Image (cartoon, rainbow, N blue to C red; front, side):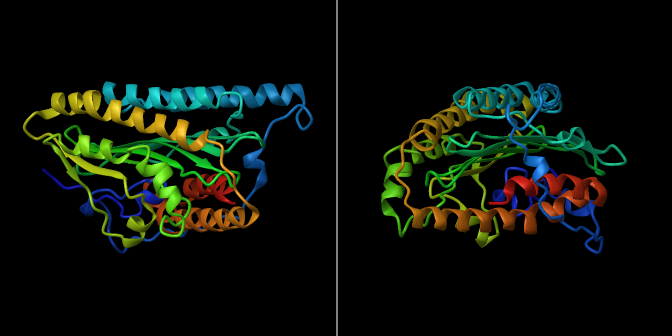
Amino acid sequence: MMEVMICDHFRCSPLSILSSYRSSFSPSTRYPLSVPSYSPSFRLKPSSSSLSSSRMEETQETHDHGRSKFIDFPFVSAAQKNLMVELVSKLEDRFHSQLLPCTLPPDVQYYQSQTGTAQASLHIRSATDDSPVDFVLGSWVHSELPTGGSLDITSLSAYLNSSTDAPNFVFEMIRSSPIMLVLILDLPPRKDLVLWPDDLKTFYEDTQLDTHRQALERVPEVKPYFSSSLYIRSVSSPTTIMVRIVTENGGVERMEEIIRDHLDPISKQVLGIWLDHCACAQRDVGEAERAYLNKRDGLIRNKTIEIDLGSSFPRLFGPEVANRVLEAIKGYFTV
């Protein structure tokens, strides 16, 4: 079985558009890429005072069309699609009244390479000012590989703002073949857990998050996945689930069984913990802590643009499309 090279920086962002097989790209190939400055128009928060009724209807239509494209998850298996749809629905249902329509342009909500070998959907929703949520981001990427087969990535994440110090939520499934999958499921801390040991206890120990990782690793086909990047390891939580699943003996049917019987319930339980004990928990955050959170969040998000998306997007979609999409993403990642 051919090995897929997974980009070491995928944990920085749930939009981890990954490098393909080692033989697929020449190391000398370079694409010019400039990340444009933040344009606030991409992060418009619709309200009756700022938008006319016709503009609001247009925004809602754009949102609905983009969401239908995103929630379709057209290139993944039934078990993976069901899991993604249920996770998205569970998160949106909890914050329903707080989440605003997606205002990304249509050519950012869905985009593809000039050759048509790579296509993707991006769905980002900001939240109201009184919400602890900064924005929710979902995406899928499908890329045909020159060596045959495809790389399929589905992801969902939620970023909180500085009104709370609770961790964010990150979920990603990376499938390079019908019998190989990498799962990333984590609540990345937003504060140093050594300096704030109460956060370690509240968010990770008392919630027994590590039991879900332990349960998943008892499945024979599940093995730990270790990033070679020390930076990636440093921003992960101590209970992160980062595993590689290969079902060479059981084939596709066994992979679907593992997704349905193991990944599905564990992922929903972890999301439930995040919703109940992190995102919706009342937290007392002082001004000094808010400043710390804004600084740390900003550094990590900027690093995502710099070392992850800025290098992988041009390879898959070309510099023109990459610039357009990255400009929109940067608008949300700016703290």
